[in-house]
Each structure stands twice: as structure tokens, then as C-alpha cells.
Image (tube, rainbow, N blue to C red; front, side, top):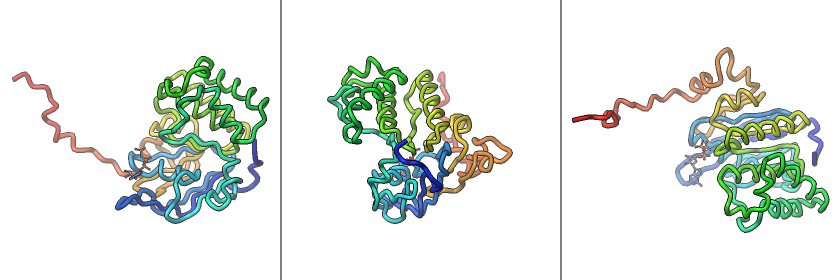
Length: 260
Ligand SMILES: Nc1ncnc2c1ncn2[C@@H]1O[C@H](COP(=O)(O)OP(=O)(O)OP(=O)(O)O)[C@@H](O)[C@H]1O
């Protein structure tokens, strides 16, 4: 790992706020991810998860508030923060005219890794993620799931201490999802902290030991999985915390097939 976690939390969001024109996407968000934890961030569509995670990793500047990675402020001490960080952002944009292997080599060089380390880690990551053939294919020709997997390989290459993954299982087939889970569990077992966002409560319940729930830009609950879900399932706790919306399906009578 690039930085010993020490006693500082892996990630702290301290009053993060971000507006897009009239939309307050993230509103005074406070969140603490303990070192060594596997943290699931959940919330309904538009709750502000992607915006919060983008600010947490230095991809989007907040209007106010701070984000700290193992005590290093992401905006005022970016080198220290980013050395410890591996990031799989939403809608990852990649250099399209490189092969998967070239991409990892390029990113490894940017991270200051030596050639032998890059070669060895790239080969292992491509094999484990079942991307051996894709390693010789241009990224422009990748499927959505392959892009997710090469993005994860890129996030892991420099052996970070904190992984921040936005929807890592989206568009990924079940076999690859199992592989990704195994990799993340191995990473966490080795002392790394993981923060991932997901809409799939069963995934979060199976993988995560800590959970944060966002609703309308705010963090409305956080803590251990057991604290947040109480005696219920995470699904039930989620609906209770963010408010059940029935959607008024009565209004869709025209969807009922009619034979007249
Ligand atoms: N670049 C942007 N410009 C304008 N509005 C934005 C932008 N990015 C996000 N928003 C708005 O901010 C709010 C939060 O969006 P965000 O993508 O962070 O939510 P989310 O919880 O990640 O949603 P989902 O689960 O659907 O991915 C939404 O109302 C969204 O429309």
C-alpha cells in the first residue's frame, strides 16, 4: 500500500456542498469512513452520491466544505491525498486509442511506478479480471463492462490505501461481478478501505460493514451496517430513511393492453 493508514479516518467529508445552477446537488454532507472499512454509499437516483464522491476524490471542486483522505485535504494537499487514492469514477473517460495494456503502462508511469512493477502488476490485473485478450484491444472497442474492469485495474495499479468506486458493478456480468467482489474483499482484508456506491442493497449488505445513506443531497444516516438497518433489511431501512414513493401507477391506465 502506498501510505500506511494510521489512525486517521480513510475519508472524511466535512460540510461538502455543491450546487448546479438552482439544484443543490450536495447539501452540507458529513461522512466518516473508518480505516479498513468497506463502506457502501446508497441513495435514490439524484440523491447526490456521484457529486459527493467526485468532490471526495478531487474531480469536482466543492462550493464549500472539505474532503480529507487519511488526513490529507484533497484540495490543499492533493499529492498526498491522491497517492493514497484509487478511483473508479462515474462515466470514466479513458484514452481511447490505447490498448488496455498500454493504458495501464501509461497510468503506471504517471504514478511514478518503475517498468518492472508496471509489467508485473498489469499482467496480473489483466489476468485476474479476465482481460488478457482485451489487453491487446483498443479501449475504444471495449464494452461498458470491459471499461469498468479496466477502470478498476487502473484504480488498483499503484496499490492505494483507499478505493473509491462509483457503481463498480453497473454493466458488469455476474461472473465478472464475482471476480470484482473477490478482488475488493482481498483488498479490504489486506487493510485497504473501500467506498462504493450502489443501488443494489443485497450487494451492499453482502460486502459492506459500514453504510451511508444519502437523500436530497444530505447524508441522512451512517454507521455500521447493523446500526443503519437495525432489525430490518437494508432495503426496508432505505425506504424508511428516504421516504417511500409509490409513484402513482394508477395514472398509467393506458399501459393496460386493450383488445377493443
Ligand atoms: N453536471 C451537472 N449539471 C447539472 N446538474 C447536475 C450535474 N451533476 C449532477 N446534477 C444534479 O445533481 C443532483 C445529484 O446528482 P448525482 O448524479 O450526484 O446523484 P446520484 O445520487 O449519483 O444519482 P444516481 O443514483 O441516479 O446516479 C441531481 O439533481 C442531478 O440532476
